[in-house]
Length: 314
Image (cartoon, rainbow, N blue to C red; front, side, top):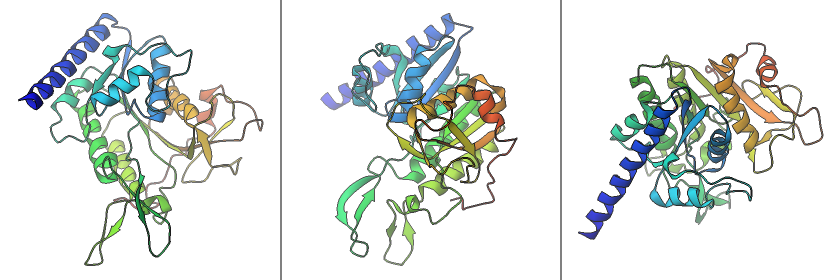
């Protein structure tokens, strides 16, 4: 009985948060309502906190559990809160598992949104075992395999946006490396079955599947493929764009998460980012000019987009 009561309380609390959040949005008719998935994570939290502080936006952050929600509100989740971070309004954070086969709650959250920022991804973690052949640690995906998180979950979000009947702008944070099927990231969490087949893993292939689904959805979209993600301050580097895992002007292959968030938000504010798929890295601090003009940044691609005939799609 106690478990049933706890579940009822959690669902009731979530419903109250949804209702309060939408009421706030309705009171600000000229505001842009933006759903940020993975708001308790590292990149997603950068996006969420920045939108909270920007005029003109009513961001709604999603997390997978009540514990994650509380950690985000307490400032202990993901990147954590800096000493000068304003408190996050409780009504701005909702509990929603985007991988759930029952998408009714997700559809309710998305229905009043003008944009969706997808910052969720399957997250690998060591299993504690060692690969006997390579002598390296084995990795798994304790919170869901890429097929579930990066394909099913993202498809659910895209479908929810389509159901609204509006031009909901979907901005998707993916990853570089998709043109190479043998990228080592695809091996994480992959196991060999008794019959010699493999299952699990292939994160870049599942991400690529979701990207193609988004592009074919008819919705306005922006797909960002960051290089290696750095937990370092943003707004200190020159950013560089490219396509198909090739970026001219630098040999560096990493970028601060905060700068990824800046580019994703720029996509909401510059129409030139719509219908675009590109790679993103940064130059080292002190090399080049710090990027401040995001219209000029997207123009540097000369209209190029990533080629999905390259690589493999799950």
